[in-house]
Image 1 (tube, helix red, strand yellow):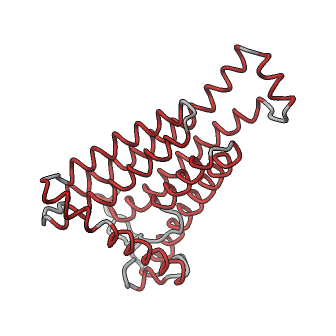
Image 2: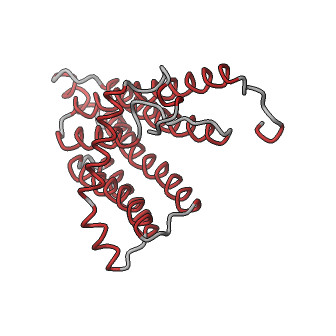
Length: 246
C-alpha cells in the first residue's frame, strides 16, 4: 500500500494488518528471488509464467471438480507461485509493461474463475448423482448430510466467484476514474491461501467454511472499496463525472 493520505483513510485496513500483509509480501518476494534469477538465466519470460499459471489453475479446477482436493490445492499453490514469479521476473528483466500488467490481471481473473467453477461443478455433480441414485441420498441423510447441502454449497461457490470479481472490478473501475483504491482486507492472495488450506485439509466442512468465508469477505472488501471511493470523492469534491468517464 502506498503512503498517500487515501490509504490511511478510515476505510483502509488497520495499520497493523496492512503492515503484516506488506511484510508477508516482502518475505515471499525475497524467498523466490533465487528462483527468479534461475528462470531469468534459463530465458523464461514473464508471459510464459503467466500462461503457466492459467494452465495450472485450469488443472486445479479440474482436480477440484473430480473431488481430488489435495491435487487441486497443490496445483493452485503452484499457480499462485507463478503469479508471484511473473511480476518479479518482468521487473528483473526490465520488461515490465502496461500490457503485461493488463494481461496478468486479466488472466488472474480467468484463473480464479476456473478454480471456483471447478469447485461449484463438484457440488452440482454430487447433487446430480443423488438424483440419479436415490439410495445414495438416503445413505447420506442417514449420516446427517442433507441433499440440499450440495445445492447450498454450489450457490455459495457461485457467490464466492461473484464476490471475487467484485473485489477486482471495484478497484479497476475506481482506478479507471483516476482514483486510488488500494484498500481492502481480502484480496487475491488471501483468497488463494484460503482455498489451498481448505483443499489440503480434504474434509467437507473445511471447503464449505472456506467458500462461505470467501463469499462474505469478498463482498465485504468490495463494499469497503465502494465506501472508500464514495468518501474520497465527496471529500475532495471530485464527484463530477465527465462524458468520457460515463
